[in-house]
Image (tube, rainbow, N blue to C red; front, side):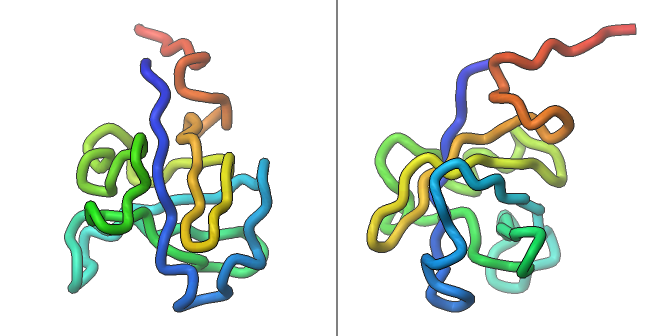
Length: 112
């Protein structure tokens, strides 16, 4: 499977950029009951809770990354991503497999 990248935004509503560091793993959860966006994907860190959301607008999604709407049907209800780059307003992450935390191209699915 082709590697997938996402942009995290909205950090200023939580803890800002401080919790993020390159290599940090983040957890992402779909929020279908979100009253603002039915394709919302919340981003959390184990230690502190919600830290932002996957960008879902052309204005907030970094070039080369997928919006929440584009990735929504390609991932499960929850998945893990790894921070690759941090800018002054965005965090860019690689989507990892939800079970193994490996980049998706390295995951071999078993068929019964």
